Image 1 (cartoon, rainbow, N blue to C red):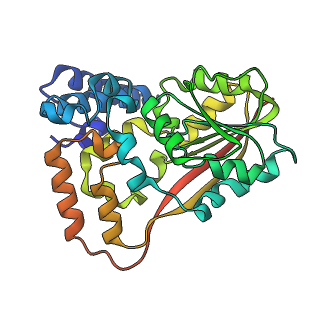
Image 2 (image 1 turned 180 degrees about the vertical axis):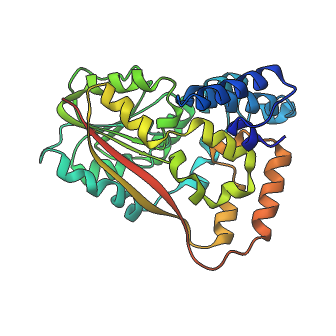
Length: 319
């Protein structure tokens, strides 16, 4: 059964939970109501069913069932920290394209930046140097924090454990909360929005840099991994609901840009990055689906041009 069909709510399944969620999607969307939660659960149950077929040797690498059911990645239960940078390294020029639009929104002297969901510290140094401010990287994965401390040695950058719904900062301490490619891993977006508002000074900025469902058709690798595409549709944010969630927490939307990001200079390099399996979307699929997708990618020859993917950049101002 094609998981894309399941997510569309167009077919039935012999698995009772999947069939039930597919029915919920059909019912809500037929009545004109949003089905974001129902689609997420549908994708989660499809993933859970697929993960049950993984051998034990893959279970520690892929999504544990607890991750799948909430739609969040539990990096401490995987080996992702050791593989992440192989496929997710980013140039300073690319970082600048995401940080420069924020400068006009911030005070001349930025007191503190919170790099929320900092992972291996990819943006932490760039944030410190761009805004001339101390940066505290916060992440719930201790393995990722250990890798960040290994990667980064900078006098204004430190790292600490914390959750998006429990940021270990005093009220009003920061002028900027920066979230790069982590928003879709937050367990509770409303709680995260409230917490980001708490740690920001009045007029402070939340910047969210993330892939969105709205732009998935421009992510070339997903064509070769339909199960990963289904999971992306279930777990990545959509532009409208993300903005609505932040507004509901009292934020004003002040910026939205779609930034072209060069993922690889050639198709061969793009294939190698996918083969590193550092993308969470590729971790959760079966080995069989992964190997089939990689083989198909390597057989394809779309041309010599760089591989560009769109990344959404949102900024919201606290009251």
